[in-house]
Image 1 (cartoon, helix red, strand yellow):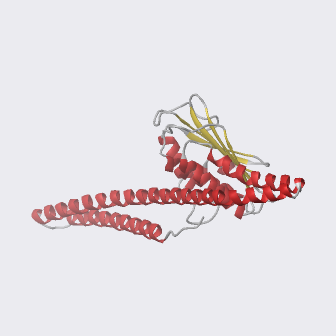
Image 2 (cartoon, rainbow, N blue to C red):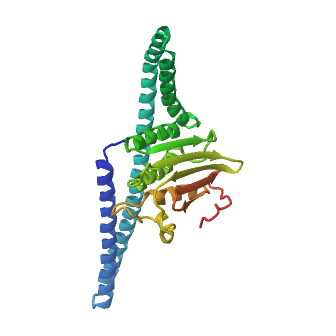
Length: 294
């Protein structure tokens, strides 16, 4: 699912540029103050310079804080927009299915009338498969999560990747906002899809679970193994094996889960790679760490 990112990218660059400029202002103010104190300037001049420097530094600190906040807000808006687009796609697909349902019934009725029972059974099986594929992604109590899973299933199909979803829980009353969970799931599925670029018979398995302690999910793919020396580094901000400008998805996912008291780990072998996450029912209440999590 493609959508414009121009506004987000320009806003983010503007905020980063503002932060950089203000850092330079702080350094310049500190340097000027030090120069004046080491010189032969009068006490009034030194006091004035110090006063102006303090004002510049305070203003720059506020600007930097606001710039960082702006970057975070735009990231959140970007995720919300993706969730809305996913729900729009889900609604469109459901409307198409409803529209086609009567046509399917007419075809089956005609085949039965002509006593083409084998053809009718084959047709029903094909239609049932399509409906079941959609139904797999409509089992949670979260409409945004359902929409995201449906959208990602369609995206994977367009890339020649088979994505299977197994929902073992309703995911009601999630302690994390639906759009934040969608951001986590979306980042992990996108990473799995990218990892399968050169894989024969690429597949992704998405599993949603729930137990007494909380909620969990697993995104597994049959792509290449992740080297052991980078399995922890992949969660660091800016780290990426895909090139410059990447490497924030896994970092944001781990931060989101940890802020809710959960965590995520990765298990990788020659056969598959899985990202396994869990978070408690009460957001912010730390739970027992996942085995292998640091």
